[in-house]
Image (tube, rainbow, N blue to C red; front, side, top):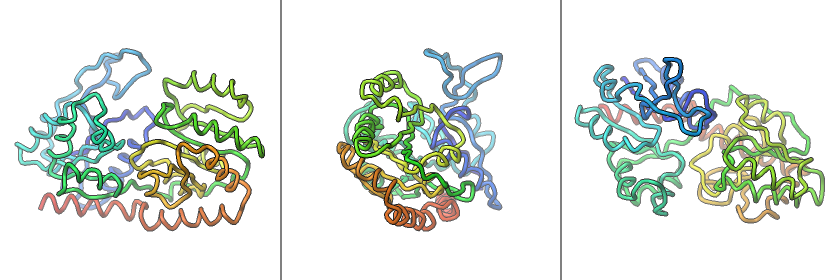
Length: 348
């Protein structure tokens, strides 16, 4: 079986989605009689020194050039199935063209496209976005929460295959200081402002540090807010960290207060490093068996952070609960066979 796997992220950028794609492609290619060919999508790059750099460069207005035509690639390698782990305005055109060749198409929903669908937000028309979900032969959702919302537009040929992780690539963190960590692009939907309020409340009771991993257009503004709140000695902006093991070795609690997520890889990475997690008490967060706090309640976040830092019994109970869920649901050895079965069912 030959699969063409289309991803939409740069090899040089930090992305949980790219990490997930790389892991799945690597593991699937270890299965006999399965050949997965990765390609960037949309097929655009930035020309620099006669080479094409995939994804976005650190430039305000990069000029993109086509690197290849996806349909030509499909004709050349003759896959049995094309997997899209990305979104683009070209999807509707290319999925239709590929299906005309008799090749099956699958799309894996990311960044809660269904949230945008139901709210009517986004730069594409709602009608066009609905077609992105309904046109492929099959839709893969990363969580039951996303699937339930997707079924409003596509009641059939939809399945749940969760984000996965190979926990053998990580080792348990031994960090037991007073540092809380969070990860994500610095933008309003990630809810960093509330977390800063929670850290300020926590520090009213005991010393607690916060490490914010990630970059984004609001970084200078948030750095200014840290100064205004008087948190410059307890809040650190680290930028992007590619060595995730190093990150989790330096924090005792992982917090993800986002207003919306798909099925974040970062939570599973914290699981694998035995770092207890607090996530938003919303649909996406309730998929995980860890602590949940309302994203508009900094007092609750502060309380949970202090509990996990001080209460060893509670901390061990949360870690034990997370480890059990990881082994039963999110290990790559559990998830990869689900993709194999899906691909076999679609191509038989």
